[in-house]
Amino acid sequence: MQFALTVPVMKCRAMQALYLLALEPVAETTADLNSYGFRPERSTADAGGQCFISLAKKASAEWVLEADIQGCFDKISHDWMIANIPTDKVILKKWLKAGYVYQNELFPTDAGTPQGGIISPVAANMTLDGLEAMLAEKFPRAKPRGLKMNMVRYADDFIITGHSKEWLEREVRPAVVEFLAERGLVLSPEKTRITHIKDGFDFLGWNIRKYNGKLLMKPSKANVKAHLDKIREIIKANKTAKQASLIRLLNPVLRGWANYHSHVVAKKAFDRVDHEVWSMLWRWAVRRHPKKGARWVKIKYFKTKGFRDWVFAATEKKEDGTTREVILLTASDTPIKRHIKIKAGANPHDPQWAPYFESRWGKKMLNSVRGRSKLYRVWLRQDGLCSNCQQPITMNTRWDVTRIVKQTAGGTDAASNLQVHHLNCRRNPQYAGK
Image (cartoon, rainbow, N blue to C red; front, top):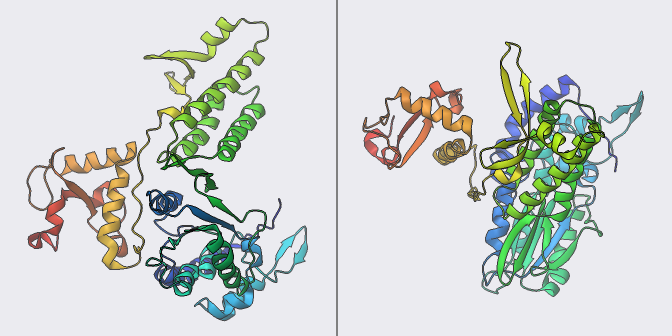
């Protein structure tokens, strides 16, 4: 599938960035509560978390409308955006109607948002915002009537849960179609379907399904296949590359994929991927030395590390003459850790939510080696004492991290701008101004 990636020139990008500073706070304030795509502080993990909340219980909805908008970014009505997006109408119209140049030929843009423009995701989100409110208005007594209606949206992909297939087909789907038609959009007939939760459905790279009443989210077969295909292409394109160079090409791909799925039921998928990757690398190594035996190939390319054998690793010399080892990452080494979903009404542009986001950001730091190292340096700088009450901070005390100079005042995430303190100190009026 091909589409026009219309990348604005630098002046237009700078202007879009300027207008985005004003538009994004408005978009965040008026956004659907359960919209998670292309929004600050939100991610696919949050969307997955909301799916779990909506479907995991025994009494949760059993039917799911899987919706996909056909060519969403390419077909949004310009007239609707100009009339409804609260920004300079003249400038917005110029951006939308600017067209794009390909091979010295100008192509007009009569619909859609420019894919490549930094303001486009916000404009597209604002076009689709209101869907959740429309459903709530259309079915005002959904909860008392036991309709079990929930919506989760990530960009142009969304699901709507319901108590029956007939209700979703006859009442919800027509309401969605009408909502989209006002914006020049239609549902994709191939990708839009109604599924029972026992059969499961794919959403954002996961398969979400109930097994004997228990909801499990796993990496989808299509997602695993796409990942392995990408690994295979990298190995195929580097048949003669040095082992260390190949490892450096593979590690970011392996790490990114494993981290994406690190909060779902992924251990079996991780083991399978590791086995498939090992098989690819074994064939890669054997092909390079057709006259050598398997034992020789194993000794050259695969090492023993601790209790693990067959570790794909290479030793290389650094510029100063010392050596270092480059080791291939394995997906199964990535720990499975439940993601804490963002609160639906949280707004990073609202000062009232600042303590919440700061605390959430501090917890995220603990999930990375770099973040933990930074927090340790801050703790040492404070001699292991709380910045407010000057009492010791230990592993057994609840603590938090905050910025000394807030982001709104130009503060950064540098260690010199951080301080750790007891969690209850933040709530104590004695230290409220600190």
